[in-house]
Image 1 (cartoon, rainbow, N blue to C red):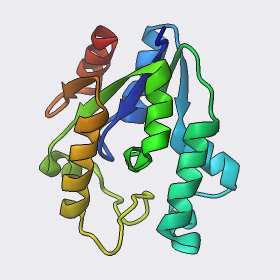
Image 2 (image 1 turned 45 degrees about the vertical axis):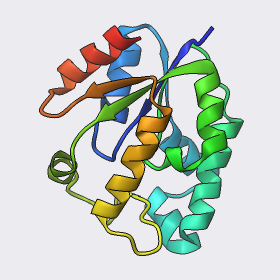
Image 3 (image 1 turned 30 degrees about the vertical axis):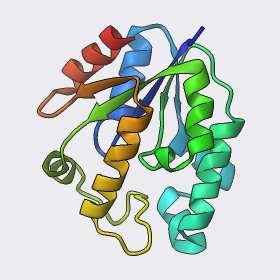
Length: 164
């Protein structure tokens, strides 16, 4: 049985904020894969990217996804988790994958610290390039799509709980 809820989506869509509240409402545990990476590496995401590069970060993220075992957990993934096919397949085996979908304009309005947040941009790609590439991957892995455009935190949490 799939006991987990796996949240995917763009930076700023609410995976961590809404995920912890959904976990509380559903009496589930909560895990944030970005925090797992930071704990394993002993440094912030942006520092990992700046110091060791995108390739190293992607490997660290994949390792965090593959090595983590969750049960009855709401899992907030990093926005770039979908770059790891093996990592996403691992998460899909034990959970329902929910895409918290927002548009590009909303993402840009929600993210104030784009340069320091630890957002993975590959080979000099723009935010718009990243958005288009990831959107196709979110679509590929999602079992459920929740449109969060214009939604409050409370509305998004309710949608997550209902989609379970």
